[in-house]
Image (cartoon, rainbow, N blue to C red):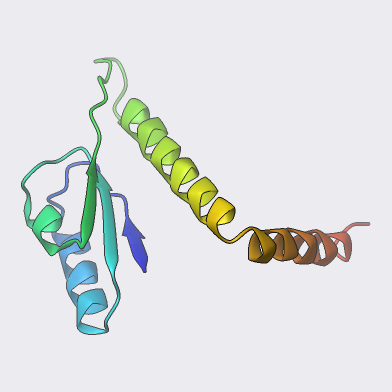
Length: 102
């Protein structure tokens, strides 16, 4: 499964990436501010976010925070569904990081 985070939902680069992924059998999840775009049509599952941005920032910070919140909920749902795998992976990650400490 691949997760794509285009803010507008209409970036040509992401359309190419999604097309290649789809041809290779990858299921695609899209998290975007765009609605009814080329990318939403390519995705197997699309989450549309609505975030009000301020005019003094160039980057869509509010949209990015909303996207992260959706990913956090999805990751938590997977962890709850597969608790034993999740716990095992946490311990493996901690052990791997322990080896990297000074």
